[in-house]
Image 1 (cartoon, one colour):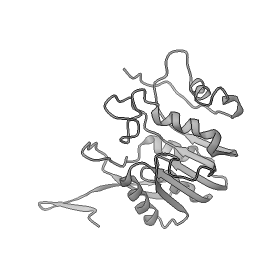
Image 2 (spheres, one colour; image 1 turned 60 degrees about the vertical axis):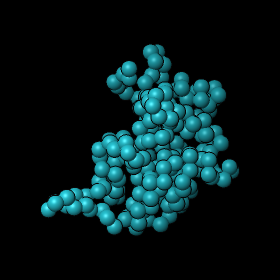
Image 3 (cartoon, rainbow, N blue to C red; image 1 turned 180 degrees about the vertical axis):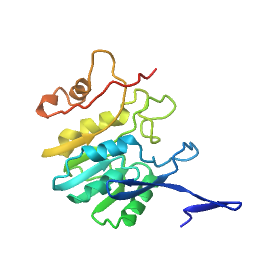
Length: 215
């Protein structure tokens, strides 16, 4: 499977392997390599989102920007069916590998820019996302695992804007992301703008915390 490479007398793994809430997840090695579109290794946000989701039984879940497939695979334990989507073909292959590695069969991984390749009428009662968030003038939002576009919110905004048409009335969206907030604004302000002023139609639980400022 070419998971090991030989350098002289040394063998080195070509992938990283992480335990996460009872699953084993393979990713690219935990070092940036801009020569190809990497699949992000598990970072603290992965474990934070994994622990934040209420694991009550659900009908159909979607994980947006699934990467290694971690959140789709965790959802497989309590959801009848799960879809993981990613715009990166390499991520889809890693996700399918990880599903096989963990013996999971009720998850489908689809190459898609968020919802673009899905049936327009398909909705979900669980949505998870850990979108890229780094402000980046050199890459469009979603071009790699870290770029959120110029403002850092390019992918997140599209996820929030899709909620009214894609989340069931009894559905829950669990999203973790980092981005800069201008003074005297909060996450709910952004969500209200992106939802056309209808944020109060939802129960929004904001777990923001003070963090470093982007320059």
